[in-house]
Image 1 (cartoon, rainbow, N blue to C red):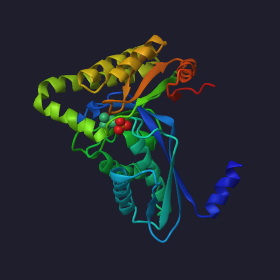
Image 2 (cartoon, rainbow, N blue to C red; image 1 turned 135 degrees about the vertical axis):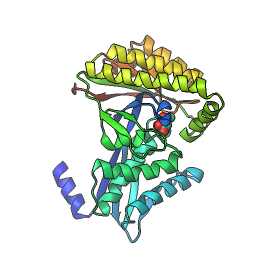
Image 3 (cartoon, rainbow, N blue to C red; image 1 turned 180 degrees about the horizontal axis):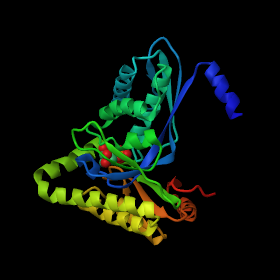
Length: 317
Ligand code: PMV
């Protein structure tokens, strides 16, 4: 079935792309200042479908309006220009909650880059995809660390860092000898990443020494977390995540709703829990579980929006 569908799509000259969403296990925000962070891909993400057209364009759904629509179109235009504007009309489909800290803009960027490169007859290697996707991310975020689109483009659990001002990140794939599973809870609406990052930058500029101590410590937790993952020590990883949440809270990036959910997940048996992504007044919380499904069922019954996802390690049923 899959094979015949792929063949008929090819025959109709349809290009497709996929960019998975991501969760940051450790190190968000510190990563903007050159410290390491760990992120892993989700199974949900953004799909693009391109069909031949007389010019290169993005079909944006009617419900994306105002500033968001303009930003999406500007971002697409940067990627289109980087690919020589192939004559393709690109449609987006997503099963990823948008603007929740799950890397939706990075996933959009990767899915668009894949379809544009393939329509242009260019290489769709991860390196080529990530270069084009970074153009889009700059439009979305201003000064992104590059972690989101790199994780989405590679589709693997990674330890990532990039010195501010440098074009080239340091990326290491992390192998987990144990299944690494998280429960992702959608806590609620939040401000755009760009604003949260800018607010933190203003505090950091005012009190640089205090903030750099906290960023150093967050970076250390990411390095310790990477070692814990590679050793299969999920308890140590969970502890690093909970401590990381405390530091994000100290940086004024948490809220009562996020804190309450972190406590709730730990009471439900999480080895560790924290906000993930930019945080602020809402967004998502993750809990590290040996097996998240019972907690997913319990929370879903109470009306909490959540899902489980395996980020790395041997696949289990
Ligand atoms: O909330 P998201 O998915 O936009 O992730 C932001 C992660 C930050 O570290 C806060 C910003 C960045 O550029 O890495």
